[in-house]
Length: 279
Image 1 (spheres, rainbow, N blue to C red):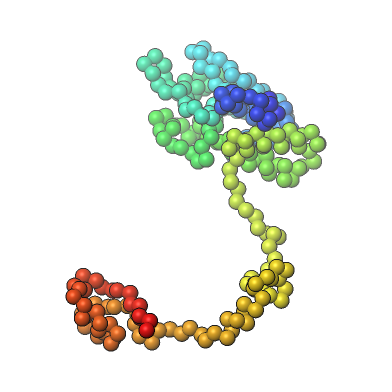
Image 2: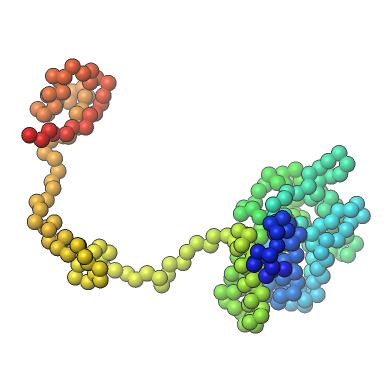
């Protein structure tokens, strides 16, 4: 599916479906090296450590169904955690209606029951395309939300992939290709954050950055420009004020007196730019 989308073989409607994006990203975490990709991803979100055995034994359940018909995007049972992952792309979380509670509340309730049955700690992980956390999307939830809730975005996946690809970490060629394709896909979907520039090593220190006719490859009409300017007299500061100042207690220079002879009301102006007329 990666390549079909990268080559524009899917319709726009299909490309914008968050189920396709969820499948592409989390299938990668399921089949790629878990001790590298999944480990970094989960430990960043949960701020905890996982052993290699816990990661290798992790169970991915895509689109499970609870008793009330609620279907989260993914349940990931790993170590002592029951992670319910709800991913959004263009759509928003389901709102409360007269017949049903809002989507996240239903998922917290259903997921908590399943986690307790398995003896796991429940966490709901919301994945959105927002560049920053939007508190207003979750403001209606209960006060214990921070304990059982984590937020991340798709851009975090791209950031993780960039870091791994930069170091390579002994990945085989096909593993590097797989990670690179997913990174290209996220970039195509504008889900790749701007990471800034690292200019170290790209610029050489120069004593001067102005044009040097002696060393320039394309000198053209610039030859002699410096010498021509050297023959000109230096422009010094004006010996008299060049602005009309209509302030109390200030004396006027002689070349402003002509303004007084004009039939103009100058009291409303504080300053008027002066230009000497050429003769």
